[in-house]
Length: 179
Image (tube, rainbow, N blue to C red; front, top):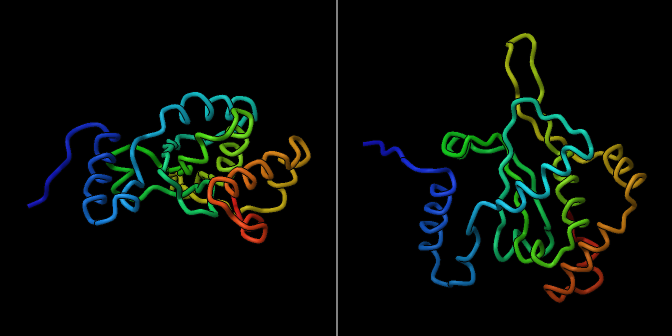
């Protein structure tokens, strides 16, 4: 028997998170996904998309804060949504952001982090099939040059330093922190 979930996408994701948490005995490991990041979505992403004139066609983008973090060396991650998440949330892409880090960052650094992640998204229209294909773009030097030329690399260093101070990383580990 197949059960369909009736409710909002955020309720579905919360339910999945509770189910996932119940699989852990350690509450610290269980605290991974708590809520859809409405503040990320409305406040920062719209501002970044308008400011940098980014175009995503019909693609819908969801934002998640992962508590306490994605990993100690990963600030954020852009990915295509799975079929289930696409069905229940309507999102084609998800941008996950480490929650503890997000809470510590200033607004300018938050915007740069979201901008960097949005550059990974690459919806492409296929004329032959008359449909959109949702792709993830690997980070290339052109994206980094565009960010670096216009905004410098201070935002990236801020993220590395913040993650390093949050998780007491040594300098070698700090250099491996990625956005």
